[in-house]
Image (tube, rainbow, N blue to C red; front, side, top):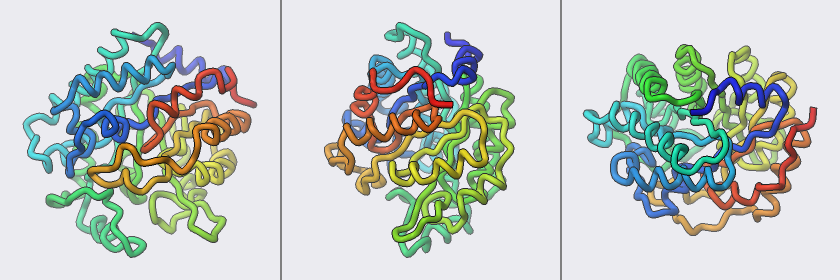
Length: 330
C-alpha cells in the first residue's frame, strides 16, 4: 500500500514523477486483441494475467505510478461489447490486477491511478460531430452500437468512479479527449468523488497555424478551455494523448494559467493505433533519443510528471531511467 499523501509531498517538493506509458497499445504489442466497442478494456476479461504482467513490466521499468486498464471500461463501453453483467466485476478486476502487480514486484512506493475517460460516451449530437468532424471520422476506428443520453453518460461515469474508488485506487486520473461537454462530464465525475485526482487535456495544432486547440478537431482554443474549466482541485494538470510537438507548443499556455504541478504524457503521433487492430510493430516517428530529449526539456521547463500514451510504451519508459533530474526546474 502506498499512501497518496507521500506522492503529494513529492509533488510539493517539485520532484519528477515517472508515470507509466501506453496501456492499450502496449497490450496490443503483447498480443491482446482489441475489442471494437470497449477497446483495451476487453483485456480485463480475456487476458487478465497479461494485463497484470504489463503493470509488472512498467513497475520494473522504474515508474512511480501505474494506470488501471479502465480508460474504456465505463458501462456504455462494456454494454456495447455484450458485457453489461460484468461492468462492476471488470472494473474491480482492473484495480485488483494493478494492486497484485505492485505487491508482486514493487521494491519502492508505487501508486495506482484509476483512469476515467469519455470513451464510448456518444450522444446523438456528439455522434453527428464525430461523423462529420473535419471531414473524417474520429471514433478511433471503433464501431457504434447505440447512442446514450447525456444523463446516462454522466451516470455511467460516476458509477465507474465509485467502482474504482471502492476497489482501492490511490487516486483518479481524468483522461477526457472528446468535446467540451464530454470533458466536463469526466472532470465532474472525478472531482465529485472526494478523493485526489489529476486532470488531463488533449490538444492539437493545425498545420500552418500557431494556435493550440483542445481535443481532436475542436475549434476551441486550449487557453479558452482552461479559462472555462479552471480552477480545479486537481493535484496535477497534464497534457496527454497529444503529439510531442503539440505538447511542446501547448506547455506555455498551461503554464500561463496553472501554477500547480504539470504533467506531460504524449502519444506517438502514429495513425495506425487509432484502429481496433493496430500494427504493434509500426515504427514511431520519433527516435528514443528524440523522446528522451523532449522529456528532459520539459522537466527543465518545470514539468514534474513524465509518461507516455498511445504508441509510447514500455521501451519509452525504460529509456528514461537515469535521464531525468530528481527535481523539475522552478
